[in-house]
Length: 304
Ligand SMILES: Cc1cc2nc3c(=O)[nH]c(=O)nc-3n(C[C@H](O)[C@H](O)[C@H](O)COP(=O)(O)O)c2cc1C
Image 1 (tube, rainbow, N blue to C red):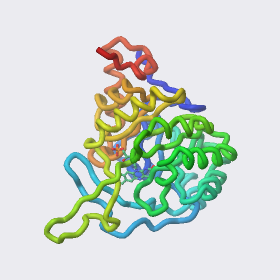
Image 2: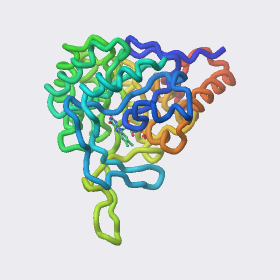
Image 3: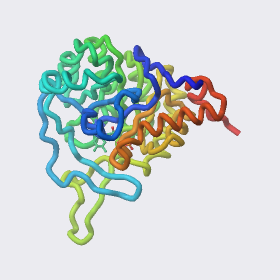
């Protein structure tokens, strides 16, 4: 019998499949389609210290094999999360991870402190990579010094599992990963969206109100796989991979590149039950290949 459990910091996930922040709400919207308790984990929407309205519309545009978004971290703020959303989602039997976003180091720290005492939130994912707001954190993820600074500050106040979500909009993602590992990150997740844009040629206007936005979906997968592979060889902490994963083959590809666990984002919009199908596909693949544990596959790509 194939064992799908994986370990990320202090978390034992029942399988390596999680949902990516901003693409799965708080899970409640998906319960008609799937059993959330079959997920390895669920990363909830980017949460900030204060409520945010998000960007003006239009803030979504379809692209070949993907989408651009400029939602801009719309959320009701951490106090609302603690008071109204946490009591509902804490009943799920899966790991719930809050994606923490901010504009200043102080914001990240204050938001994290409000989450630190919640028994059923065993981990946070520090979003230092959102490209969709003026000061949405991507600035923190694009230099080693600022990535290290925010990770260091949050590590001081957060005893739980600290995952740092990296931006792909950099020259060398491996060196950013090393800098957050050195400040005590328990794991890194990658990638967030790639900065992109699209123009409506009839109207000669940008398709997004913010002009630029974040590109996600299958079109980014080969770049994301390359980045996971580079980061896997640069750090000793677990890597959580994402970027265009739509089926079990994609998930296995990320795991062979070095991901201990994976997240599914944009493809939840195409098939709301895709994650449970991916879990089944990974199990069948492992059984077919006589693989007892996911750990045997992590980074298992063989060179010629
Ligand atoms: C509509 C939308 C909203 C997102 N919101 C967030 C967010 O709040 N925080 C975050 O870290 N990433 C956010 N992301 C990025 C995803 O979590 C993920 O990193 C990215 O989309 C790549 O994975 P995918 O190609 O499977 O979607 C968002 C992505 C989309 C499409």
